[in-house]
Length: 346
Image 1: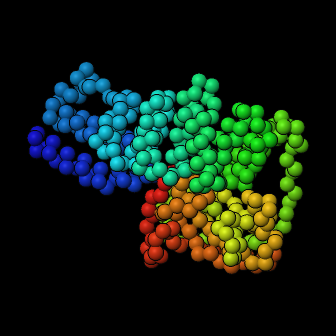
Image 2 (image 1 turned 120 degrees about the vertical axis):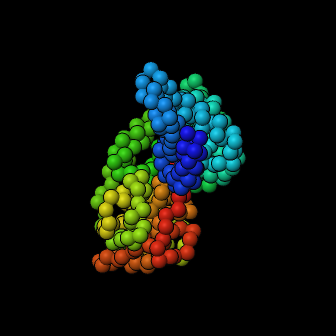
Image 3 (image 1 turned 30 degrees about the horizontal axis):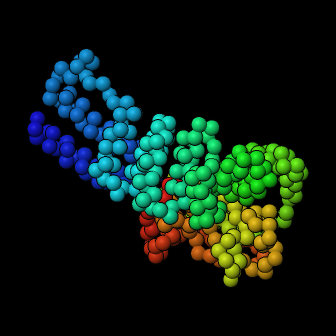
């Protein structure tokens, strides 16, 4: 039986080394189950093989609860304090348990390892607001949101929570202004509810509702394709961004669309209505750079490991459709067989 146990431990170490790193990035709940569940399975198997009485339900030990599994993860993090993804996983797990003090401590540890990460700032701001008896987004939580937006002005969760903070302080006009850019950034299925929330804030500020956007002609038509090697690595949570920006200007897009990655190839039309900034309009340009990016985190800003195309010049207002091919990984040189690397995950 000692030989069996030695073999089982060896197998577990191999599984951890191969399976856990990618799971930790893309499916953290699954990674937690693997981390805790595999040893329990091995122990149970040993009990069955080594002792027939283990088949008797009365002799079987009770399975640990999810709370016990999270506690086990917390013990592991004390041994591995430099594991950024582990602290994020622990913080989110504690948030689900509504153990907000423990969640705060976990996210603070994560921020020590990545102090400029805007998503971690937003995570911690949310925890601080949940800890507040009235769930108010104020004080340190508001400061964290402002810091996050200084790093990533288009961070969707930071904009949403900052708008909530302004709404709670009866700054209704400011809240509506903060939320309005989300109409271009948020998923299509959430925009109707978001527009209603914005108009409610505008009504409280004695402002008219947002005008109904009139249909605008397409200024650029784009056909988006993806290399087969990268298409095979897509997951359902990935997000496609198709954007146009000034040919010789700042990286801020003139127009952007956020889409699912359910099928390729697909054709996308970009117009002035897709612009996040009303003062920067695609119709004011003669040519633009068009590119497509698949974000693993859902953020509009490129992250290491995101899939992307080369920027292609397009004539504004032309009738023909231009093509872009997503065939490289952000932060890496092009290769004939690109492999997905995990970037940050919300």
